[in-house]
Length: 297
Image 1 (cartoon, helix red, strand yellow):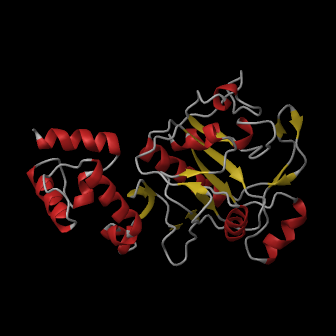
Image 2: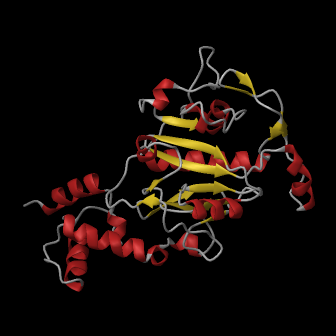
Image 3: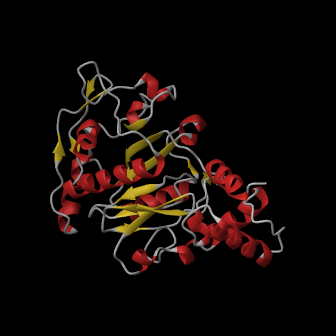
């Protein structure tokens, strides 16, 4: 058997890389590294990353993810997000992962995956909370989940591995195919003074935003730094998963303000707001996803 060829096929199917074993390529060094791991864990030492070896390696990475941090992360030179127990770079200085001391980790309210997931779209939400910390507590109490949150100061929190299925979009079909972010925003103008008292400054106010053919009430918008963080996250998720930098558009070529049938039916791949999935949701009305993505490109 051609062990190099086998491991290449295994990696493509299961979603692992030679870096999991400290190697750079699919070669004899990788085969020897796999054999070493197999011997240490009383597995058949054949140098092949079969399902049994993969599950043992994967579970070890999940349980001890902090031990696999890239050197540049340990030295605070780069930021990363986590996808299928892999560290993927993100061009944003303030990122907190779920296993870090100043991060937030969801332990229930989602479905754990044992093979690499291939998400098709990314859903933007506003959390109607004063902060990402409050959002995390609400999710935890309700037994639901989301992959990311963006706080008032632009800090990106990752609550769980992007490979796992979060309960955020609504239906099982939507959750299975998506990644989600909750952007901190209390929505109601009465909370404007709270933001100013806490030192975040005055939030932008959104007037005349349209959603589902109706004009939405005046509400608080996102800080510029939150939108910049969202763009950095979109770019990193696009690079990690291949989700296209596309938004649902109306007939004039602008970001759609209504439910998008291709999104709701699972035929769309790209970046959406929650209201694109169902007319029971209004978040994130006024968010011009098309423009955000154009700026990334």
